[in-house]
Image 1 (cartoon, each protein chain N blue to C red):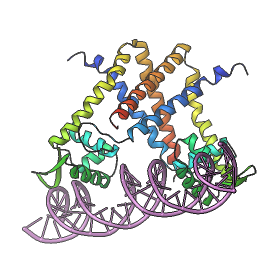
Image 2: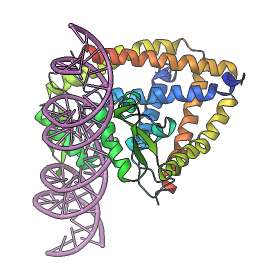
Image 3: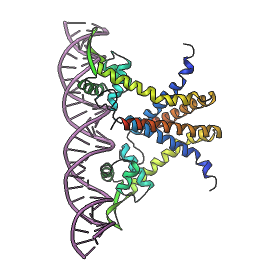
Image 4: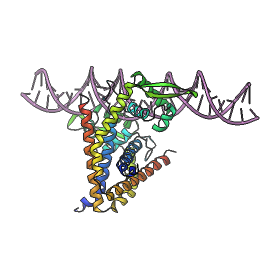
Length: 162
Length: 162
DNA sequence: GGTGAAAAGTATAGGTGCTAAACTTTTTGC
DNA sequence: GCAAAAAGTTTAGCACCTATACTTTTCACC
């Protein structure tokens, strides 16, 4: 069929997109060795980054932002403390709450991660800056459409799970 | 700073994109309840889909295509067989190889999944069809840029892992 | 002010999904 | 013919998450 290259174009794009999604998830699952001698795993990096962004956050607060259970945060937290990257401090106004802070070792890892993002995102930001307003607007709209699609996906799961 | 909305636009888009990527990965991790009474998990769906697409494939062949170890395939395969969705057949030309096939129950799940994709992708394909050739080309180029970025990412991990 | 419910955090069991390594059996190559 | 390679399975172990039970503290209401 000589028109395959036209009708298949969207499918081709969808597959390209899904490839990117899977590769990104894959890369995020790789352990990390920057800024510290400790090996950091995905969940640990996420929590470290969150604590660095919001020093003094609580376990429950972190769980809400990471959208996981507080039990999961508690477990990851323990690993970060064993590695000497994070410390717990008592909340002066609430005897049950805990305030999470980075140690200097933790800050080293945190800023190494931030710096990695800077250099890494550099080229990409550059590419973005070179785009026309039309293309930027289009991308924005496109992402919204994808988000709507994901809503539909989630909804279809919700229905068939009852 | 009054120009924040301009300089932050790329960052805003990057975060939007990363949100989509994470949400998609999340949705793929949800268990599945279509076309069969059995609950299917991500690895099981992937393998089921692969066997449906390529009936008669071997364990090692599947491992290569899924880019995981054959041990992982063997484990997932066992679950699919316990659920009665897949069966092993001897390879007539190679006594050690195994040919994987869907049972009727497996085909039901496989086609339910395919049908779900059809209806699900429907609206999105529609949206795609309405796009101009310029926008399509731009998206294609954009995904290529993201792929390049992921290459850089992988490379940076490779270096720091030696 | 006292009491019961809610909230913060921890600990544990269990489950998915993967790798690495050890193992068996068959096929292939010299 | 025999060693090496290939196909597949099994096991131990790790990362990561949820659900649940639990303790301790705080809060709200009478």
